Length: 134
Image (cartoon, rainbow, N blue to C red; front, side):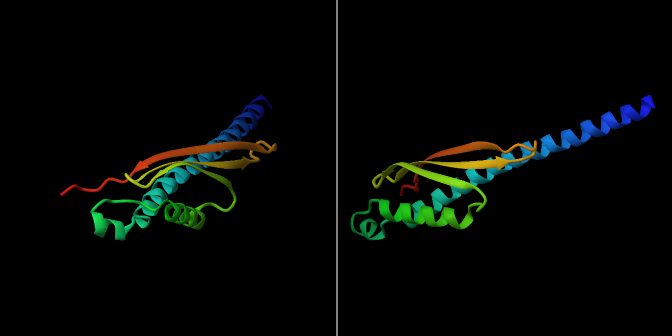
């Protein structure tokens, strides 16, 4: 009888350990996916927002701020996870030299413990568009 209680205790701890691992892995994966999506989307939106007419006229690389914001939000919305709530805060958009500072907050809900727990995952990026100088 004593050995069966030890077996039940070990099985209970194993199930709890698997639950905690699943819970933290889910949050870690969400954070990594959000950061990678934020970084790639910012870079692509900056390249899309380059003002080619200004570059051909003066040789300076300028970025259109409105076009950047439009492209960033469209690209981020296409690839974001629909089960999360996102808040996009754009702090600074410089047209020349091309630079952006933004932060994305997402809310992650989990019910692994039977009670709904909410986490805020915040990712911030400061990006400067660099090009080779000839």
